[in-house]
Image (cartoon, rainbow, N blue to C red; front, side, top):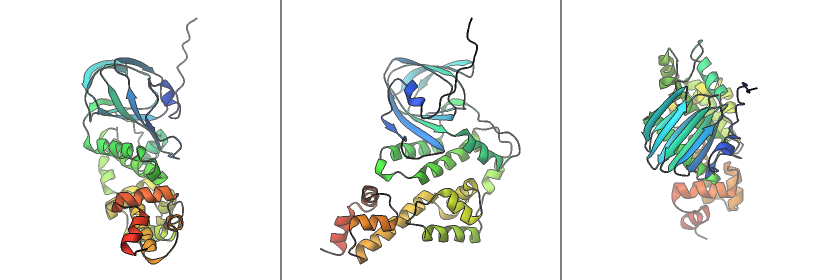
Length: 299
């Protein structure tokens, strides 16, 4: 008798097991909770039959144009897949992919609960994603490239990046690629001065701790989604970038004004490891912390 049971949806952690090659970069082990990401270089001239995925899939074609035939949503589509194009596939769908030519992709797997929670804050109606392929969207592309850059720099990773990137991606998806009927509400998310002050005070007090977006939002009396949106609008950068800049500034002051070991400076400034601190500091100033101290203070 033919088995008519629907195939089991796989988790983001299981996803690489069904690809033609193991990812060259991965968010595995980074404690990202709202999204997982993989950079994949598929072999040329290949066919993939993929099981349903229990996460929303956002893919970015990174390089190498190729000819692609896809089958999902009950439809077959043939197209030329070029770098910069985006694909959106909502959760729990089987798909088949045939291509000729090389295929270099970033797979971003978004927790449906995070999107549903954000949608519930701006609409009382059920909100669903609108699937699509061959999408040219500079905002999603920029978010994806930031994620790819983060994957390529393991010493600079932070759980706060996961939350900020997920918030930015969710906002874009709800605005332009969902059934949300009142997108104007997304444009009216502000943070009041007293809530912003509470958030900034919390960050300053806990800078050397493992600061989490939910804790900062709670200090401001807001949900994480609304806080992240309002904070970026008010400050001009997402929370994880703001905190990283503060930590670098604190470390710079410690390098100038104390004789603490570099590892101690890193810890006092809130960096998880000395290598993380060194990588971030070099990116900011072009020299290592030790060399900076030599140049500024002398030794």
